[in-house]
Length: 150
Image (cartoon, rainbow, N blue to C red; front, side, top):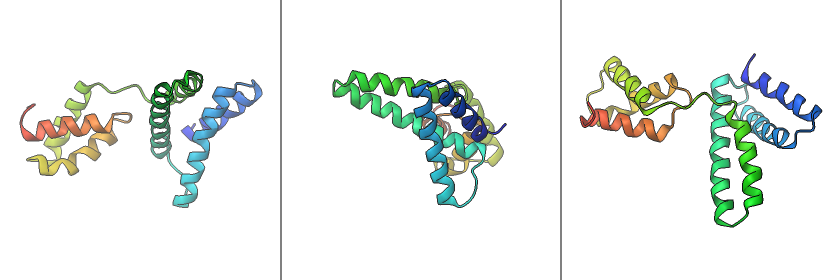
């Protein structure tokens, strides 16, 4: 079952069980997926749907921080509940050690020589490790290509 189909099934179940946080979170992602499909004028694959879920999760995290700063704990708690639901669709977090290992492999495969070759390495590492944080991948690849973490 594709990730998009799984979202549709989970939305139906949330509607039947009157699970408002689940229904809201899944609808938000479903709308984002539909908007992206309209924009691209073609159906999205699982990787693109996963990227949307990751993006929406990051937005939720940012909203939580802002709500906490504004002393709106009620809204922060609501957003946290929705974030937990979205996180269930994400792959398990990738450790820095896994990123380092994948980066070493990709650097060897593409023959990257220095920091100028980051653009060849980073997209391949991210494709191999769905759910890896792009900032962490960038940092580790940069360190390895500059020779400080060989």
